[in-house]
Image 1 (cartoon, helix red, strand yellow):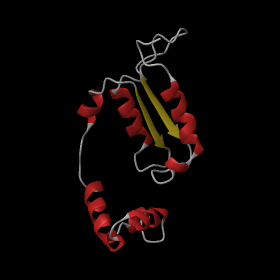
Image 2 (cartoon, one colour):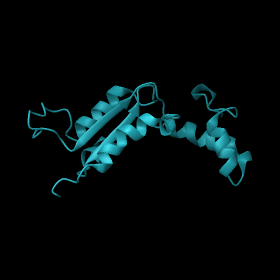
Image 3 (cartoon, one colour):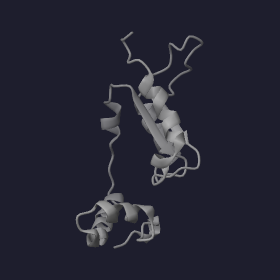
Image 4 (cartoon, one colour):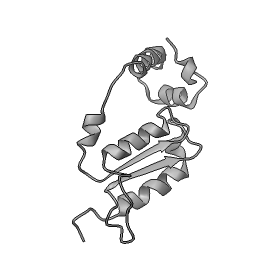
Length: 130
């Protein structure tokens, strides 16, 4: 089963990358079949997400396969968006959410917007450190 309904055919950047690094590029249909099975499988990772205690940045594209409301749900499970952050920032959670405009699951990694969103989070001091 080819994932043509997701736009994943041989004339795509995804295939070009796969063909460059795969030990057997002819197995492309096998990969697509497994991806198709995966995306059609129901799963719920909300308990796992809610259990994350480390500062977490969630980044999605607004044209991603994951709907923005689902990204917001994850953000809420991490404690984000529950209340106003306050003038002094004391109400800001350690979770962050970035929904980047005009990006998909396929092109987000090559966008400068990703680095602009992630760098301040990575550069920030860890809670409890000086």
